[in-house]
Length: 485
Ligand code: C2O
Ligand code: CU
Ligand code: CU
View 1 (tube, rainbow, N blue to C red):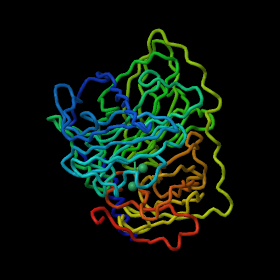
View 2 (view 1 turned 90 degrees about the vertical axis):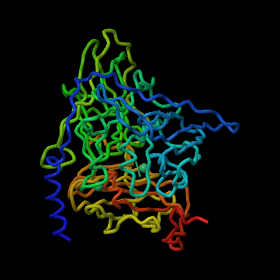
View 3 (view 1 turned 30 degrees about the horizontal axis):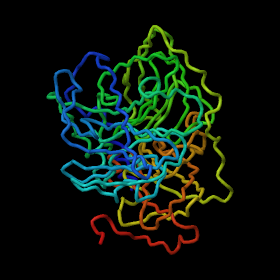
View 4 (view 1 turned 45 degrees about the horizontal axis):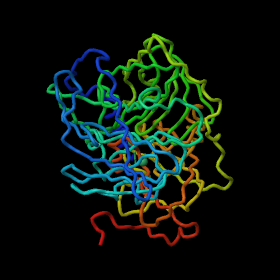
């Protein structure tokens, strides 16, 4: 076991140098940042908001000057539209698969019944339409959606299937909220391009980490620039990359405020200069601009002491130009509506998860195996111990707080509700997890590393939520898709 780990680590340290693809040069910040369109729902007779999403494989995207790139998209050539809905809404999705192969669409960050979750058990065959529905009942947050099929998520996401899902909550604090004006989605992804313009997917489903790109797309825009017209602008940062970790801030190292984490608002705005996001994580930040100024949003690599190959590079993400006249923005509210992190209740159960190269507790993902049975509504401590290079950890359905990383509390900007956490190499992370109330002993939710190559290789487990008191009698084996009556 030990020996195998050493070999894997040795392979990883040579990774960054080994990925050679033709770099394709374009002028810096030449393209206006694309803002994914807001998807207008239809209102069904029962009042449900019906959102129609078409997964398509025939996209022709223009990323590089003079070149076309074949991509996948949702209602368009690349990425999806933004879904925006309000707490209390009845949501009905109609997801139609126009790919030549089966896929799924998972609502990452959404608290909903497991059958509606869009994980590997909710396959959508080619030509089929899947219509999950649920009532939106969770705090305002920046959430997202992406395919989540067994062993093939990385390629489907890399080709372009992903989108943002914004949850508003009535009566929330006054934050910038005009979509595309002072409330800007930023979906950050790294890619490689071949010299003919096609996406280089050579490492998407091979290698130790899978894919690390050398070019950054923001909302599917290469070298993007954005003009803003307000003093305060909210950016919803989503790391929708396969493997890369970013530390996002500004070239002039200005301070800004973090107002929300994956699952909802912080208690108060937290001032910082960098936000670290591993794949799947989100942060909402509010940035102040001065009239006429120009600044570059960037990502810088980590201190090499803590870093491994997934976080060593520096990238420019977006050039922002502030108009000569800016509309005044109300001051940031002192309180954002989020609760302070409370310690887990005394006697909370602890579950331990040991991460190795691509296994959890020495097991590969098995769709027929229930790994954990959790009583509905439980507060638990999940302890993630990483015995190798960096991973991260995402839990479906829940909101959690990071209790500590190697015994130390997380930075203040990470103390809000989360569903995905970075797990540094050889670190131990403890989470206070609050589970929901949708019981279903035969439909599991997933927990996994969100480095998509690792997820596909089997670094994933399944848990079910059950009526408290029925844990013992809950079957540990279920049927996988394709085996239904
Ligand atoms: Cu973003 Cu299990 O997924
Ligand atoms: Cu998820
Ligand atoms: Cu991993």
